[in-house]
Length: 354
Image (cartoon, rainbow, N blue to C red; front, side, top):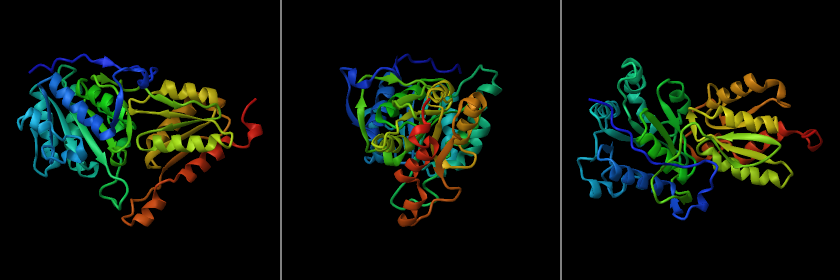
């Protein structure tokens, strides 16, 4: 069957503030995801949602609440606890002409789907010589806090970004959660969207109408001249908090929200580093083999002689997440640790400019 027909939506401009839009209002991250799904299903009858408990009132932390009442059980499907089966089923639905949105409540258990993702989803367009697409969108939720432990807290975006043929997004705001999800659903490439559970209650201004946030376009969340801080996902709000704190000390941090890690915005990052000549990357995953390492390597390859200080990474230690909440607080980088990493790269005031 031919690939589904693309749906054209308004493309949101990264340079235009949301608050200037008349239709903007405040939603939580979870509400924005719910609205994106509802609008996608209204726009196109080929959009279906499947996953464990997506048809329950709780609606996967509220992100699918009310969908089954509006669109019926044929389009909002609860599935068995069989992650490989549900991912393979989503691929089959896409091949048949639908646009499935698959919800994995825990990214950790999505690992049972690695054969389907690695050997089928990522390869499909390549093996068909570009004649067939599989527009599957996978929502993968990462736990954090309240003693989640090592089986519920892995953010494996670097793994998936390593695969050609898969797009990977890490929205940090409600606005991007909606726009990136709609971009994924109505795009032609398989996409994995990493959602941190701790972001679900955070609020932002969100446009009422459907819109798309394009992949590979980073956003400068805060301007600064002393150091570029590239952050992704759950570490973006933390980077902004630290930037406000350091501004009181006279350190101006430019915070870039990467938004997507495959593709990622090389140009925006390098342009910022070209101005500040210093780089710190905040990545909510293990230090070794991280997206942070890839960003630093790319910047050093392209701009090495222009840097005035070695780049730094703020990542998780190369260890599994402890179950104890007390130990968990030590495991995740604190605001103080992030601030200290930035201070070390920036150096004393008299050495920053000139």
